[in-house]
Image (cartoon, rainbow, N blue to C red; front, top):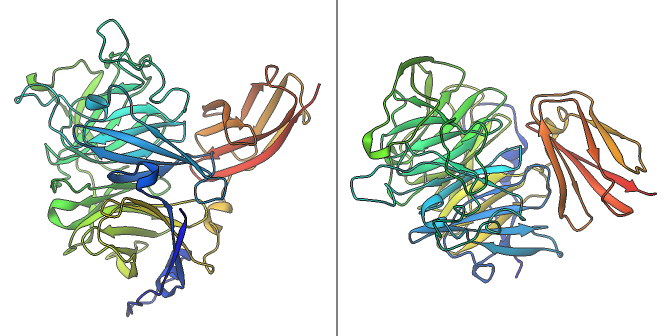
Length: 450
C-alpha cells in the first residue's frame, strides 16, 4: 500500500531576508511523498486530518459523506505495523452531517465542523460544532442505535447549534474551539465547558462568543480551515470565499452586547455575546483555492486545492512573506497538518489519499523540544500506583498509559503538576506513559511488577 514518490520542488526566490525555519527546507527538497492511506482504507472523500496528542502515530482522517461523515483511524501511521479502522457513528447524519473539518484537543476530545444549514426543516438554522471523544472504546462504539427515542444519541459528547455551514475548526484549550461560521459570515469561540453525558442533549452550559467584526466568506464545498498559534494567540483563518488568509488576535477585543438565540436555532445557553474591537491582519490575498492551513514556529502552510501546492509563509513580520511552494503533484489537496517531527501530512480528496512529506534535511521540532515540559515518575517499577510529576508545568497537561501495541488503558488531564495514577488493575509488564501539553509530548517506559 505504501508508495513512495520522489518530487523535486521548484524553488521560488524571495527577495527579502529572514531567519530560516526547518519547514523552509522543504522548498529546496529533495522530498519524498509517501502514500500512507488510500481508498482501500475507506478514504472515500477525505477533507481533513489530525493526530492525537500524546499518542504517537495515531491519525484521524475525516470523510465528508452525503448527509453525514465518517472517520478512518490510522494506528502506527506510515510504519510497517500500520493498521486502520473505519468508524461511522450511528447518529452521524446530524452530529457529523456533511462534516468537513476536525480538530483534536489536548484532553483527548475533538471537535467536528458541519457544512450544512440544518438537518430539520428548511427554515431551521439549528446546526453547529460537535464534540467527540478520541477514545476508541467510545467513538462510534457506545450507544449505537437507529435513533431509538428511548436510547442515547450515539457517542457524541456535546453539540451547540448557532453556526450553520461550519467550514473550519481549531482547538484552543480544554473544550474550547474556534469555529468558521459560514452562514453568519464570521468567527465564533465555542466553549462546551463540561460535556453532557455520552449521547445526551443538555446544552445549557455552553458559552458562545461571536466575533461579528471578523468578516469571512464561505466557498461552498471547499473547507476554510483554521490554525491557532497558542503561544502568541493568533488564529490563522482561511477565508476561502475571498481567496485570502487572515489572522485574528484572540487576546484582543472586549465582550459586548448579549445576543439572542434565533427562534430557528433555539437552545438554552449559559452565555451568548458579541466581541467588539478584535485585531486582525491580512496575511495573503489573491490565492486561487486556499483550503488547509497549519502553524509552526513562525510559519504557516496553506494548501491550494486547485493546484495541489502547499505554500509556506513567514509570519514573524508583517506583511507576511511567501517563502516558497511545495508541489504535491495533484490537485485536490484539502487539510494539511505538521506533526511533532516537522513532517507535513495532507489529505487529497481527488486521489482519496493520506500522504506524508519527508525531507532528510528537516530536523524534528527543535523549537518545540526546547520548551517541552519534562516529567518524572515514581516508583518504577510500580505496584499499585504511579505518580507523574511535571517538571515545568506549562498550562494544560494530558497523561496517558498505553500498552506496547498503542492501546490506551488510562487517561487523565488537567492544570496540575502532579498526577497520581492507579495501576493496581494492570497486569505485570511494560507500558508507555505519555505526557502531552501545548508544547509537545514525552514518553517513558513504566514497568509494573508485583
